[in-house]
Image 1 (cartoon, rainbow, N blue to C red):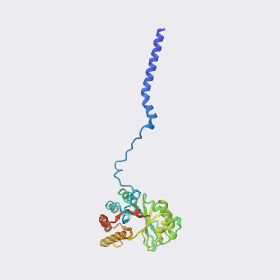
Image 2 (image 1 turned 180 degrees about the vertical axis):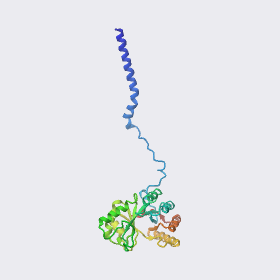
Image 3 (image 1 turned 135 degrees about the vertical axis):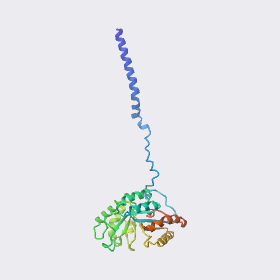
Image 4 (image 1 turned 60 degrees about the vertical axis):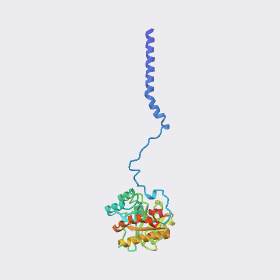
Length: 288
């Protein structure tokens, strides 16, 4: 009888010991599962370069519009000479918009680099000039004789040649931009993608900007070609006239080509512009 009692006591002691052991082992697991909702979420740190990277496109930043007269310049025709374009991206202050050729071999990579340096990224929209086909702006040119759907597809193709473009500018297009019916499908694409169209105004009777605006999109009109005359003295004079136009009308937009003489002068001109009371801004900032 005594032996049975001792065995019973032994079993009880073992049972109590195992219960205590399981309680110790399982308690942390119960805390992990049951108290998750009360614990702060783990902090995921961004890569070290993220805070120093100005990659956000200027058009995507919510910056206050400066007061006083404003001027903007879009530098175009980048994308064929990769080394020259890369040097231009680094040399030009980020406030200059940069436009890439849609068929440029290096345009996509260069556009990404430009965005990393803080530039607005634009792309050229090739349109039929009066001298077509002897004069051509390149592949996938929008043509007057083609159906609206075909021209809309070409405009979509252009926008797909660089990542997240801010806008498009009319390349040549002296015939196409003068025709409101031809511009209508292009205006729809511009509006749907939320980009800005800059009408280069290669012809005085262009209706491109008006058609885009009437379709509910955003558009700008070029006021001056900076380097039609590539002579350095002529470029300097054109830049001064552009600033004077901004002072007179409140704002002005210029288009420059990626020429060595032009790129040599733009940074110094931008630095001295503050003395005139005119503020240099990214091109899209001037689109209503």
